Amino acid sequence: MQKTIQYIKSELGTYYPDTEIQGFVRLILESVLFLTYTDIVLQKDKTVSADELATIKELVTKLKKYEPIQYILGETEFYDLRLTVSPAVLIPRPETEELVHWIIHSEIAPAARILDVGTGSGCIALAIKNELGGADLTAVDISENALEIAKNNAARNNLDVNFIQADILSWRNYNWPQFDVVVSNPPYVRELEKEMMDDNVLRYEPKGALFVENENPLVFYRTISEFALVNLKKGGCLFFEINEYLGKEMVALVKAMGFSNIELRKDLNGRDRMLACRK
Image (cartoon, rainbow, N blue to C red):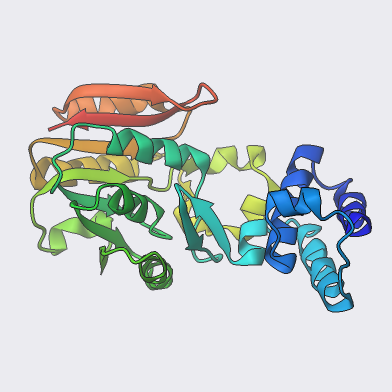
């Protein structure tokens, strides 16, 4: 197995930093050889079959094209859940786990009715449901393909979430109940920020879930906030994952709309990435 590990490292050495390659090694061996991290350390002399090596070489070839490892393997981990992912949905990020952590440790009623807008893989709604079992979770997305993946993830993790296909930009065309919490990680990357993004994101992740026009970068936040003014219960909470460069603009937006208890929170890297407020 040592030769196999060296093969992976040498093939990917000019494509990725060493720390990322170490992660690839762990994920590849876990997926192909069904080894835990401890197994990898303790079974250095394990024999890798010809078929297993061929599979590993296929994975490495895809990684050299900057295809995300999560799409290659078809799954990822998020807040203690294992989720199916494909290019139809964004790959869940650690920053989104921080948002979930904030929500589940807020003062939310045990049987709260919670709406996740733009659910994608379902990661936010499913993680909240997994932690707050008594909560009533609804998740909305415009993409039929994304909702199929989200429903699959709900079934895979034995979690009960209500999924609805709807365009939140046209929310007035639908009938909505009153919610205690609304949360969203909507598209927020401006076109001008593309040059700062990695190739694996630009080539493979769904652009409709990522990008907004430079001239109107807060379009989803403004619409979802308008939705919340009507469909949040009094005292209800609105949570957002946000563009790190638009924290002040987001605070000004929700303040101008009449929300209170506004809190802008940084992620573990010290970037403005989350906002919460109350109706």
